Image 1 (cartoon, rainbow, N blue to C red):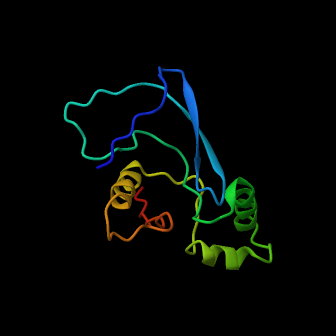
Image 2 (tube, rainbow, N blue to C red):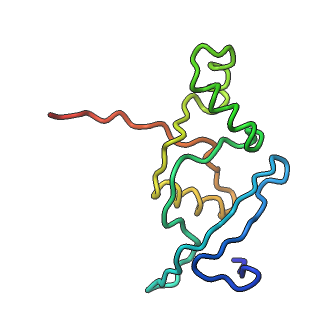
Length: 129
């Protein structure tokens, strides 16, 4: 397992930027809100909180993602059906499941494990009143 230390000294309230996916140019600003102490050293990094679904792979950076969201929100858009099929048939930008995200992170670090390309489709839940 590779070890990585952030350059410089970081304290609560500080932030840094990094570039993900040079082709699409996703620039992230990471703000340090707190340092957590673990009772047991974790085997893998993990997500402790989050919001919203990750964009589909190769959506075209922030401008492509904005266009993607506009198309899937407008059923009258001529590209609506094709775009939905391209992203797996369903996309909910508000979806976030911490357990699924951490499972996907662990899988991404393992060799020969198929990566999830799309957020999972929601399960139909019966409402009992």
